[in-house]
Amino acid sequence: MKKVITLICSCVALLACEEDFLEIPLEDATPAEEFFVTQEHALEAVNQMYAYQIEWFTSGFPYTGVLQIPSDDSDKGSNPGDAAFLNDFNNFTFNSSAFLFDNYWTGQFRGINYANQVLANVPNISMDESLKTRLLAEARFFRGYHYFNLVRAFGGVPLYETLPEDGIYNIPRNSADEVYALVIADLTQAAEGLPVSYSGADVGRATQGAAKGFLAKAYMYRGDWAQVLSLTEEVKGLGYDLFPDYYQFFRPQNEYNVESIFEVQSTADGNCQADSQYGQHQGVRGQFGWGFNSPSEDLVNAYEPGDLRMDATILFVGETTPEGDLITAGNNPDNPIRYNQKAYIPEVDHRRNNCRQNADANLKILRFADILLMNAEANNELGNAAAALQSLNRIRTRAGLADSNTTDQAALRMEIWRERRVELALEGDRFLDLVRQGRAGEVLRAHGTQFTDGVHELFPIPANQISLSNGVLEQNPGY
Picture (cartoon, rainbow, N blue to C red):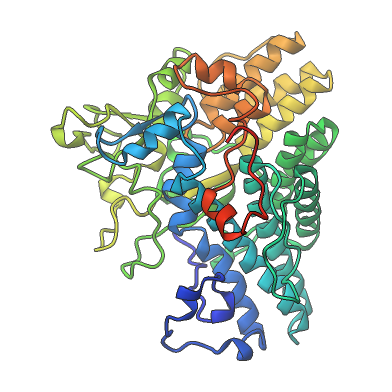
């Protein structure tokens, strides 16, 4: 059952700093100067951070266009003429004027602004102190999460650790090292104030495991394997496990299960406010959605024979799903022949409304399988092949594959990287993993892209943001 924790905040103080938003009269709105007074205001402000995760900038084209389509796991999808600008993301022919970069940048910074509003104002509210501690930890979690997204995509970005007293937001970029330092500090403090789990309507909120899991991931991108190992061992001790059935893990009836560490809720609730376009823009074209982010043939070929995850990840035109849906793709020869099955919502589970197709697809942001793979990689980098294989083979066993017995460090590294690809396929990690591993150019040029070493490891700072800053923001090299 959905645990509805989203709430659209009515306070103008929480809206992103754009004049057009501020000029819209809000029905039953609370004036900004009267907000952040009560415990209910604090809860409403924090709930808005969760509600924001289903917005277009955080779960629509900016999510798949920037994080997934540039990888070798994905093709643009849809028909050839639809959203043709996405071909530039497939081919690395984009430039700083591509609006999706501006959308992605804006989306992450709006999330940071919501968090900073909470961190600046909630400490002054007279309320239950234990709840206050938790709400502030949730805000730090989100700020760390959004900055982690930004630094991996763009490198150094401006740091806003509070609401500027002088009202000046136009500041230069900080270094990537400084951004990672804030990410690590925020997630560390978040872990100290978050519970291990929730019950009732609070299920789905950020937990200690989510904070420590993302902290481990941040350290992985820094190459600090001792920290990765320590943190993943801690998360392993918090009660998570692999969900027995890989296919069923992604179905709506199994949301927030034993493997789920953090996911973004979307629900077709009938009022068009709690459903995202994550599922719609990836759904089967002409049947369940628009058909973008089509799994590549190279991804199909990456699976070993007998790997149960292939049919659970890739929805082929002409197949009948376990729920009885015949995938026809509208019988249009211009449509893709493969779709992202992880975003598929069976017809029997659709709560259709007048808003979107495929709207009940939650975003699986972090799951226990990722923790095990990080643990395996850390153990291998630290010279402990036996422990690495223990975590790796838990993943392989669920996939229906034989255990790996590789003990050579270099060979095992490649096995772990391959396993990350097929286990986490179409979940937003592949391109960033290739960059982290130092082989993005080698892999992606083999698929005919124009990836340039020393340039495309980072995306361009959006031209619109540089213009708005009057040149205060400096462009990344090569753009």
